[in-house]
Image 1 (cartoon, rainbow, N blue to C red):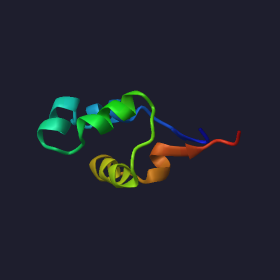
Image 2 (image 1 turned 90 degrees about the horizontal axis):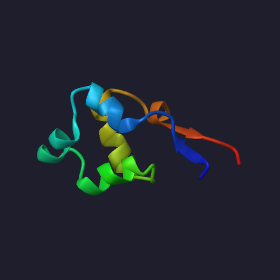
Image 3 (image 1 turned 90 degrees about the vertical axis):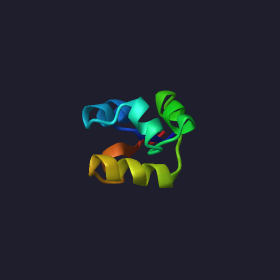
Length: 68
């Protein structure tokens, strides 16, 4: 998997005030997306965009390309 998460996204969201209950309740991210983040699986660019909006960051702050 050459593209990896640079940070623990769920931890960063929690630190910014978005715990998993709030993310689900306010329909900011679906349970499937939250579970994918827990398992370090890929999520859509639409969801990356939403996370960038919530954390006020750029995709490069979240993702990194690693040569195999």
